[in-house]
Image (tube, rainbow, N blue to C red; front, side):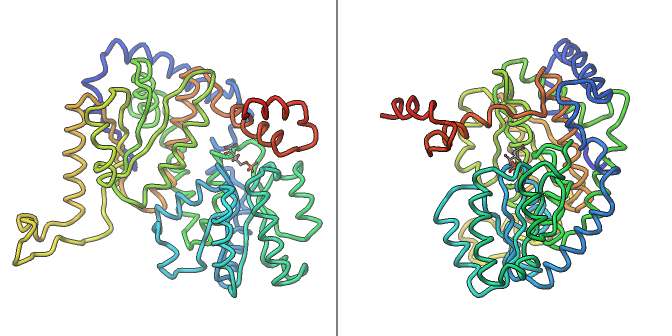
Length: 444
Ligand code: PA5
C-alpha cells in the first residue's frame, strides 16, 4: 500500500470500548457515503473522479500547459481557498517551495488569495517586461478577492497585448455554464476549463482547477491521477480494519469524542507546508459547523519544535498529532566532518540528513506521547506524483467519512458567507443597506 497507518502511538490512548462505539458510526458513515444517501450527496463528483474525469478536457489542459510553458516567463494563478490551495500544495510538494528559482518553465505566482495591496504591487513589478499568462479560477466567478485580482491582471494583459492578443494569455477555469465568468470568457474568446458542478472547491484539486497550474509546473498529471485512481480502488473496502482512510476517520472521531479539540498535521520538510494548508481547508471547512469539529492546525518540524514544541509537549492537553512521514528521501546529503568539531557534532559526521530527520521524528513522537499527546502516523511511500495523488484521495475520502461520522454535511460551507455579507454591507454594495447602519454602529 502507498499509505500505511501506524497506530502504535495512539492505541494506548483508546479503549476497545470507545473504539467499538465509534466504529459503529463510522460503518454507518461509510454506507451513507457509498450509497450516496447523505447530506450533500449531490457534491460527490470527486468520489469517482480519478476514473470518470473528462478525457477531452484533460488533453486540452496538457496542450494549454505546454503552450504556457513555452511562451510565458510568468504565470499568475488567480484564485482563493479551494481554487488555489490544491495546486500550490502539489507544486510545492513535488517541485519545491522554491520552484521559481529552479528554472523549470515559467515562474508561477498566486494572486487573488488575499486583498493585500503590497502583494499586488509586488506581482505587478515582477511582471514588468515579462511575457505573462494568467489562469483565473473561480467557480462562482464573483468571489471578491480573485475578482479584484482578475480585473487588475486582465487590464495589464490587454494593455500589453491588446484585446485580441489577450486571448493567448488568459485562461479561465469556472462553472460549466451558469456563472457570469463563463459567459464573459466565451464572449471575450478566452479558453475555458470546467469546475464540475458536483465537486466543491476544497475537493477540486484533481479537476482543471488544480491540474492546469500543476501541468504548467511541469508535473506529470497522468501519474498524479494514476495515484488517485489506485487509491480510489484500493480504499473501497468492505471493512474498516485494512483501510487506512477509514481507520484514520475512526481514530480522529474517537479522540474527538474523548474531548480532543484540535488535530495538528505534522510534516518534517518545508515542501509539506502548503499541503498542510490544503488539508486545513479540507477538514476545517468540511467539519467545522453546527458547533462541532476538530480544529485543524499544522506544523513543520523540526522548525516549529523551536516555537510551538513547548506548548505541544506540556501546554493545555487539547490536541493530538497526525504525523505525515515521507518514507523515502530523494537526497543523499550527509553531515560533513569538521576537524574543529566546534559544535561537538562529529558523532554524526557522515550520517545522512534523512536519517537525522527520521530520528527527530521518532524522538518527537515518543516525547509528545509521554507528554500525553496521541500520535497517529501516516507513512507515505515516497515523494512521487503517484503517491501524492494517492494521498489526496486518501484525505478526501477520510474527510467525507469523518464528516458523516461527526453528523455534519461535509460538503457545504454556510459559515463562509458571514464575513462576506458584512464586508459587502460596509463597502456599500447595493441591497445591503439595512445591514450597514447596524454594523457601523457596532464598530463605533
Ligand atoms: O471550498 C470552497 O468552496 C471555497 O474555498 C471556494 O473554493 C472559495 O471560496 C473560492 O470560491 P470560487 O471558486 O467560487 O471563487
